[in-house]
Image (cartoon, rainbow, N blue to C red; front, side, top):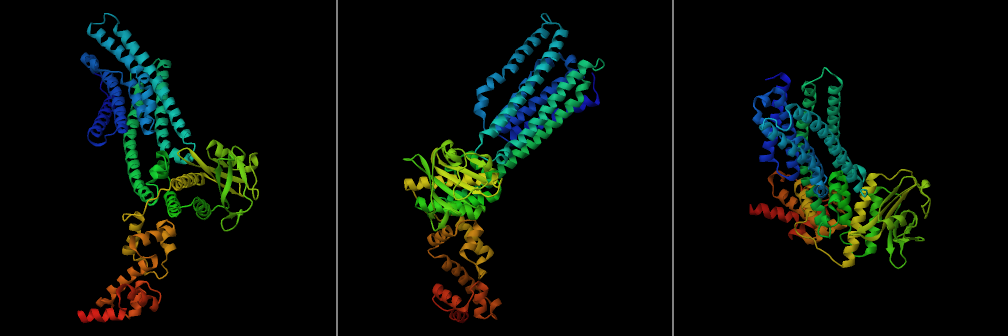
Length: 561
């Protein structure tokens, strides 16, 4: 037998990777995606082991081992492709082509079977040299070609996946595909090195046997190890991230009147929210809660444009609604130069569907981000000429309500962040308008997440002790609107916000009035410590909630003691 350091190390490493993958497959990670991942790793390493057994000489010494040989080199790339499609949620496409992808494996499986029969029958059909020639030439050349072709196909699938989310910012989509493309690139490089090794053996007469493949196999083993390790770590991290984001999204969904954001946003849009910065969830939460008490379309539209200006730091924001009779867009709410008085647009304009940038967005139902208006002849000047524009359709379940539009005096002002947030806001707007048109409402319940957070901050952080504490301050802390927080408190505590905060202050004062540690404190000092800003405010609130004055409470308590 031909044992040496390299083939021994390669054999041991391949067996170790297979053992680890089998353990993970059986006891730890059990889902379709990870199954493809580990089976790819297992079969790819079995291919290396089969070759090493020939290199060592065990296959010649024990011909029965050849009966266990299968053309897994044509199956492992298919499993890698299956993993790719599963990761991208494109299994319907994979299932459509899976039988075609299995043709090379099936063909060589039949060929291998014929070889085994020929060997067992003492080579009546093909000589040993012919079988070796076919194995080295056909098998190897076709398997590397097959791997490269599938690599190219996988790359096209990834690009098509990215392009299919044209309604989402590119950097959001590529967060999912960036990692996968790195894996693909590494595998393609290894396949190209494989090709170079084949060419080197053909060109150099001194190169023979499997020795030239040792460096290549070591690189493949490193790839399989890193791929298996990093892929598992990445997928676990994604699952943890999704679970954490689901909690935040549930809180936002619970507070919006349409039974959950999962009925407003598609799974890909929710995935994009999960992949974005925390600021996105904050803004989404604020807009959703600010719409809670709006029961008229006009109130919704004006609320949206006002919040777009204040939260996104825009110069201008206009909402156009579709007029079915005129087949045109009509300005219904605007914030900026167009709005000179409360909720009244000066010289509102109408834009036919298909005309101008806004009309094109409405007709095609696709957003447009114009970095330089001077280069776009479709631009229709309204109150003043600006240099960049962002327009997003307001859609719900395919129905066009209108267009959310903003312009700016700077070129290249609007970025992917603006686009992403505009799409979320437009979807929320459409959902709310749909809700109003159907006259459906849901109330505030006791398990409201924002109310729980609010009470937690009061009880644990004692925020009420700040005499400057206010409704807007607390709403900003929770990233919700002041109106919504006020309604939460009114509904769930039967108190207005001021009385509810004073109730906490009174309870704090009650504790201090009867605590020996504060026996030397004056009554006014205790009131100020609890968060009241004056003696009169303290006495009035205390008597309102207890029925007696702070002095009477302290005396009564000490007498009773």
